[in-house]
Image (cartoon, rainbow, N blue to C red):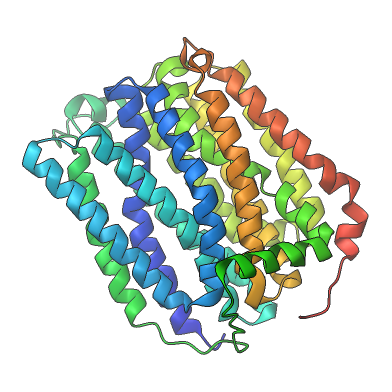
Length: 425
């Protein structure tokens, strides 16, 4: 890899900012579920935010193809720092963060994700040789999920604190350590600082594109139409790109909306269980990053994704028929493998079939459909029925059914997908 140093700085910056983001995105849903007891309110906030990202996602893809991807990262870090530091200082001044500002941080972070990750993968494709696409995507997953493991562990500590009773429960007796739980504005301050560090690392990235980037200076609408036009020309890519997103659609809702309610209402457990489940998910995703290409080295990407989708359906339904923190952690571990594994395989397949100069615009189309699917499911799950007693388990029935329905086009067009080729444009 001739841009190895640039990739190292990019991955390091992603890990640093992702660490505190991970803690914040665990803390906010739990705060609404356990402290405010307003899971339905959070569901509405999540639904509105998701719908708003539909338009942002369509716009962001055209930005990724139009402007230097390094500059986009610098802009995201700057915006993240301004928002997080302002909200944090407000919390320090008043002693707590107003609910609408907590919602603002959640919304801003979701918006950041919707630009950050497409830009990360597009940047990786831009500075990576074609034969190394699979390796680069695996490295992104490995480093990102390693960060998630650490942030999950820290989230468990920061949300619940450490005391003698907790240590005794996990078998560590005669150790008297007392760390008070962190407040949200303290977590947000940590998040803001990491944006500064990430900005500094990205600033020093120097790279040479593997191929000269073709920049389209047309309007946003024109560039968006070009992405749609490309997928209309190659409908198999549209079917694949949309259907293979299914695990990710349900997984995001599981982590941000369903799991806090599942832990609080169904398991009647504390925040530590929620954070530990998130951490085991990251362990599974980390293993997928390390070994998914080896595991399926004799299997084509389409078949491998179908297998991983079936595994996801089975474990989601396992949550319906059990009531165990251990089972939840096991399910999250399997989901980590299936979601991260399918993402690596999916992105590598798309990289091999979509030219870099249009990858952002086609990604916008997939992202828009992803967002519409999530908005629909999130809106359904905000119905009070799902927040009553342990009715949250029925949300997992719906989620599993969604993934099952998404399998149909992959199975139906299976032979055509594995033989599909296009000419470079």
